[in-house]
Length: 438
Ligand SMILES: [Zn+2]
Picture 1 (cartoon, rainbow, N blue to C red):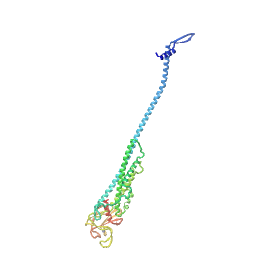
Picture 2 (cartoon, rainbow, N blue to C red):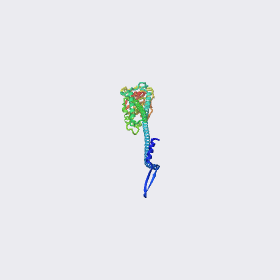
Picture 3 (tube, rainbow, N blue to C red):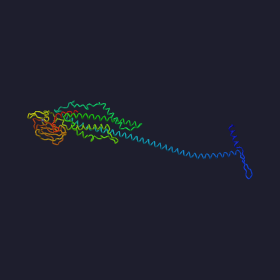
Picture 4 (cartoon, rainbow, N blue to C red):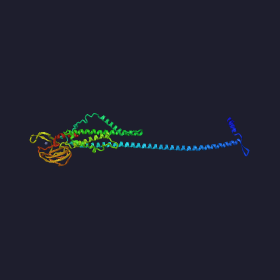
């Protein structure tokens, strides 16, 4: 037995030694004897009761607290859950918004590229249509040849220094255009600063778009260059006739056809307010195409051919000469061509017949109004093959070569009148040789 148990036993036997409780009633003293065991039993019962009370109270109090705690925990969980739900919803919304934004950005870029493409194809188509008309006229003029029927020789094209004194060489012009396109692409997407994968995709798209923009810019520039070159050549052809091309195409310049028929030359999309460089450039090129079209129209009605396409000889020039009939010096207002009798005399440009009949001195004569102040006259014919008011195209037959009127032999007397004044037809025929070469 340990000392500890010995001690406990001593404490117990001191606490619970046998006790007698005395009490007096009716003068008689009684006593109750309580053994140690009884005392222990009482103490155990008392302690048990005390513990139960304590447990019960504590339990009641704590239960309350547990409920409160659990409630709080539930609330926290619920709050957390709804918070997380909200976060998820926001994230979803963000993604949806970003998708929407990117989709919109993508669609806008695609729409823009297509709109630019349409402008481009529109311009290419217009230029092609003009070129086709020019080629048609050039083929006709080429077939007719020079004043004496000379066929074109390679190398007799008009020598034109296109855009003389252009400061920037071609290479730097290309790089300028690339830079312009890149700047434009950047400006377009300013303010859409995103981060992460999405941004990378957007960057890729922007890069691709910028490349397309610069390609389109380059194509526009190429069209511009070709158009400008053609304009210079045609202006040169017209100038060589002695007529200032500006007096002939001024109305077309003022009306600016491009805005009426050139298509969507206004920046598409509602958010855009300022026209981009591309559209500014496109408008400029469209104006050039307008000018080319106007020049083509002028050229189409300019008498650049000889009135005979068959073998012929120019027998008399324009200006002062000795009159073949009376031998006196006189002004010859046209040029004479000799060719076999009844050779077809043809219109030297498109126009409308405004006289077909006999005139004193001219014999059987046809006059064609070409517009722009130009009239051509075909005289001394054997037969007339057109009526007044009839529309003719280049090289349509107007009559047969003859000897009617004041004539010494079969020939055609041909005149070009500009604003009712005779001009030298030879200059026009010579100029015509350059059309098919340009
Ligand atoms: Zn004559």
